[in-house]
Length: 298
Image (cartoon, rainbow, N blue to C red; front, side, top):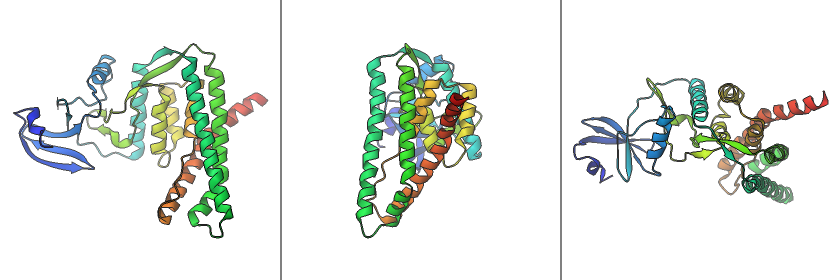
């Protein structure tokens, strides 16, 4: 980063290093992290400050190309505790930045059709894989594992269709929906903790339904911690509306597209992780379908 010293002539760099592709500079003024600007977050930080949300890290210096942040030597805590802290922080972020936006039917239809198109595509994709696999004389271990668990794929597709239909039938009769500032890139590595807790990496932040933060959090934590606990904590601080729950469930139930053209050891690992995702997601979402079905029969 040859232009770094031009940010401030008094910014004297002693040494630099990398931690997971993050540039760390040691200067006479202290230790800092250098990040290239992917988007201008100045207005975002001002907005968060105005909304009394302080769990972000203010840049120490900035120019047209870079943000320079103070280096935080984050406290080492358990994965579970860090996940709980993140849920508290995003629920606070959503609470403090929520507003209601008028519903445009075209936008609602676009979301509805987008999810249905994804479900139809993924259904056809796995139908084709199933047909090709069944015709082969030799079935690779990864293909066999995928074929053996194909029922899970179609269960997720069917349940996602159920929830997105429920969402559409409910939301189309409403005049407004909730929008908040969302981080939109929630990974536990993006939470730093010392005397305060800081969410970092706001480059994908936008104003959207708060459920999309839960989508990214779920996909990054489902295999390491019970998402029921995180979901309950979040709901106790920022209760989701019925239609928001439906959209959340429909979105996380959409199966990923597994590419079986890689080396067999990689294919087998990806199918194994994919199967675990399907099982975990069905376990998490189906109880809400069961509760609803039971309430109708009583």
